[in-house]
Length: 160
Image 1 (cartoon, rainbow, N blue to C red):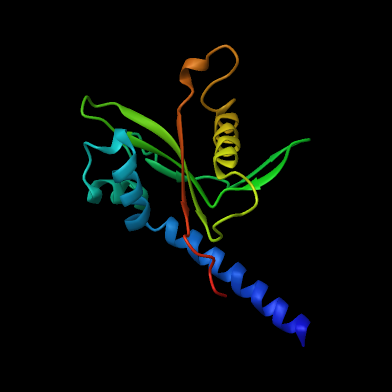
Image 2: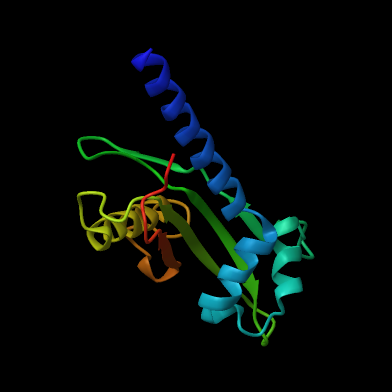
């Protein structure tokens, strides 16, 4: 019976984790995060940001928003799973766009046993490495794009 309770509890935690990740990616939630914390989004309304997230295309037919592979596996370093990893091209007043790489994390334990700041630095490093060969290479670092990581930590451990 203990095994059944343990498996049920684990399944419930996995379901809640997946639901939280879906909520993070909802245009209303993600749009508010972008509007509230990304300087390059300040000239856009929340409604405009949500339209970009929902799939608006530029004049060349490219999407402004992309949800990216949330798994980063670096040989000899390990694998991590971002909760929600994406990039967005934010239109600017002067007619250009600024691409931002964004990771949004939610923690359900107050003290996970490691420094969330150190973990955030690791995640940001991985986001920069993700850009290598896509945005920049060793001959042209100036094309590296801004990376941002937001983490929301619960004050109390979830009662599951």
